[in-house]
Image (cartoon, rainbow, N blue to C red; front, top):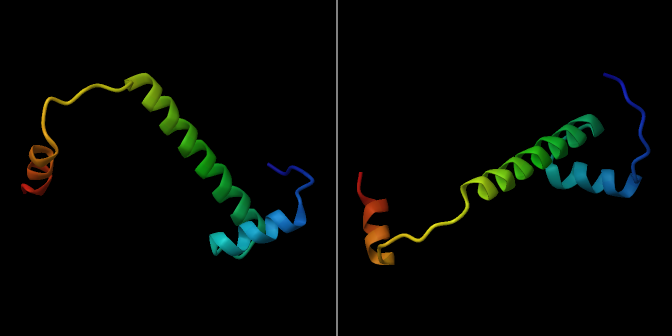
Length: 67
C-alpha cells in the first residue's frame, strides 16, 4: 500500500543510521515491527501477570545450567 506521510528528516536519518539499514522504507518497516513486538510483549505480560516463585536464586541458576 502506498501512503504519504510527513516525517522529521533528522529523525528518519538518525533511525536509518542507528538501525543500519539503507532505505527509508527499511527504517520505517523495522520501526513498525519493533513497535508491534513491544506492544504484544506488554499485552502478554499484562495477561500473564506476575507470580512468586518458591525457589532461591541459587536453585533457579542451577536449573538454568542443567542441560
